[in-house]
Amino acid sequence: MTQTKKPAPPAPGRMTLVFSGNNYIHKALVVAAEAGVLDRLDFVVNNPIVEGAAIWDYSPLGRHPVLQLDDGLVLYSGLILCEYLDSLNPDPAKRLYPQGAARWPALTFMVLGDGLFDAVSALSTDTQRPASERKTVEMLRNRQRIFASLDQLEADASRFADQPFHIGHACIAGGLSFLDRRGPLQKLLLEPSDASFDWRSGHPRLLAWYDKIKDRPSLKLRPHDLGVVGTEKKKD
Image (tube, rainbow, N blue to C red; front, side, top):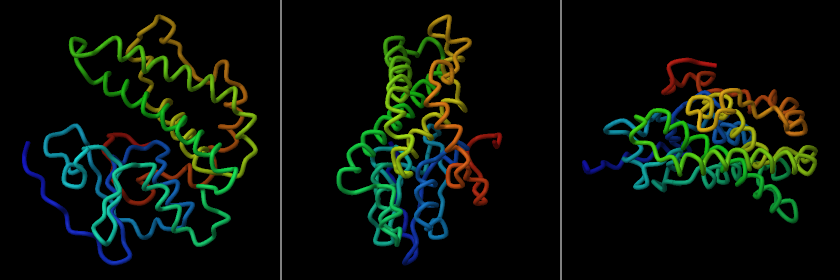
């Protein structure tokens, strides 16, 4: 592997967000918008699967998003960088990572929503591989993760639907948005019924919550709204 070069830290008071720029509900942009710090971000758009991807200059893990701070520290995890961005909100009452008893349910839903996103992402990568390079066992496990996550979210919707907006909501909305945008089950057809898959079917409480929350301004934000050209060919 080519030796990486370490990018210079951003200017004092600024931060560099390295991400793909895909036009789904991106949790890092959601949290930055809610914290009021979008204007402090410089963007590096990166396609992690191409040769010489910029992400390797910032992270030894080769995964995005990552956030580089002005002191040179790089936050390698999306969930960690979101918590950092949230900490910059000058109003503690409006932060998305709650404290006290409300913290643990919010973090639980954060992990569930992010896990849904990861399963969709893994299957989306499989759609770009030749059939001979796909691993059926792994694909079926990720398919199971999607269905189980949706069923759990439906069961839990009454618990999170009326809570003040928090990081769990941002991650759940991001997972659902990515599932809609990528549609990996319909492309891979691991089971015959996947041809007509629609997560909305059989999940009325989750759907009612999503329909209500999806118009929140931070959730409607897309990279192109910030003048950022993403790695996808088409915009929403």
